[in-house]
Length: 129
Image (cartoon, rainbow, N blue to C red; front, side):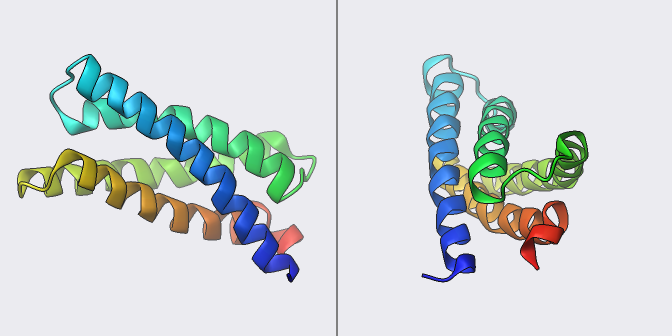
């Protein structure tokens, strides 16, 4: 398996573990605690999964660059754009009558793809070459 394929596989597997955290915490907030609005459950569950995903993908997938603060700030910039965009998308889909869990799945898949490319070609670009 070539380096890029292995890196994508690692990212996907760690992201799946972050997805489990996101789904479990979303279920806790939305289904157990009864937070009515999709976005009220989505935002804290996203934050928990981002922390998990960043930590493991930085260490095992992309290997540390020695610039942890810079790396964290770049990921924060990604989420400064992704979070409002995905929250808007989720609210829009929910308003159309799309089931909350399907909205969650759509947003999580878009997060997986966009974050992989952002981390590979922006955050860890010197490692990508």
